[in-house]
Image (cartoon, rainbow, N blue to C red; front, side, top):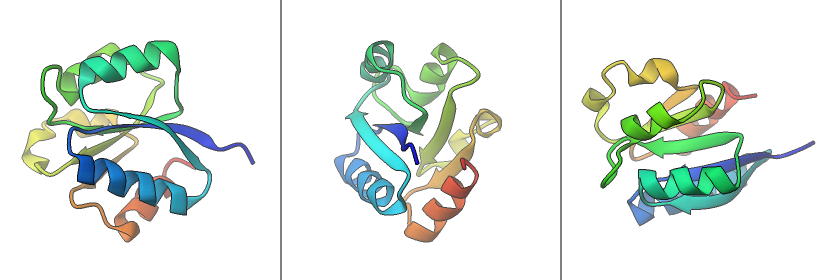
Length: 115
C-alpha cells in the first residue's frame, strides 16, 4: 500500500513532534517534512507536493488561513488548532479538524476520513 505523503505546518515544536509521532503510529502516512510558517510551507509545496497538510491556523507571518488561499481546492488539509473560535468557516475547507492538544483517538477519527 502506498503511503500518503504529509507535511506538518506548525510553529510549535511540541505540536509538530506530537503529530509526527501520531502519523508514524497510524500507518499509511509518511511525514516528508515540517514547516514553522506559511511562507516556508508554500515554498516547500512548490518543490515537493504532498497528499495531506496538517496545518495550524495560528502561524507567524502568513497564517494558516492565508496559506489556504494559495492552495488548490484539491489539496487535502487537516486543520490543527488550539483556538476553535479562529475557524470562522475555514473548517469547511478542511478534510478534518484537530484540536490541540491532539490525542490518539481524535487523530484516528480524523485520519479515517482521509482513507
